[in-house]
Length: 184
Image 1 (cartoon, rainbow, N blue to C red):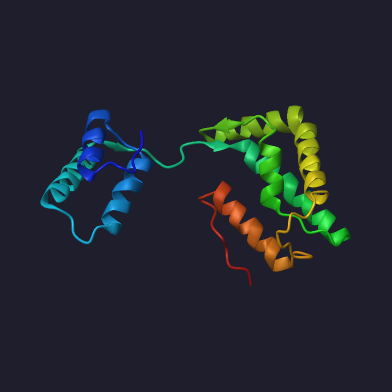
Image 2: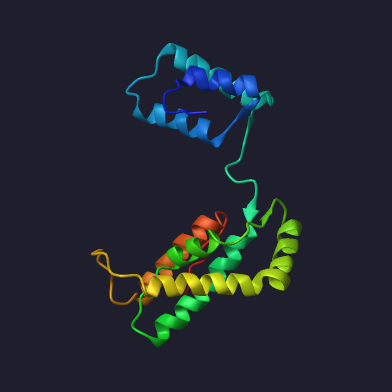
């Protein structure tokens, strides 16, 4: 369903019909509210109706992410270790995100909805897929190292802060509940 042309009233109508408010629907309502200089009485009434339905359980808000892909964390761990090793030994500069994305596109997903399921998937991957994960990360690194310069400016070497920023950004994307602890 395309939300970009839907009104608040239509979104609320759809949510009431389906019994669910999806993240896309929620984002569209937020976008409309943020960009409207003033909401109409119909829009306020629809929002009030939606709020009531959410409070009574007639409509359930679907969480943004109900599952995790364990393969993402395994590939990211492998990519970070390999990139750090290469960057420490050479003048090469690699983007961990590019490496991980390339490898993930060539590996099977390992989804889980519980921590128990995630542990099962991790164990399965370590016994059955670790070699394949390493091969795909290495292929991604080789591709990245030998990519011809297409005119895009590339820093000659990532600083420690740049690598830390990349890792932090990736962790936030892959582990949204990750809490960054202050280091002293």
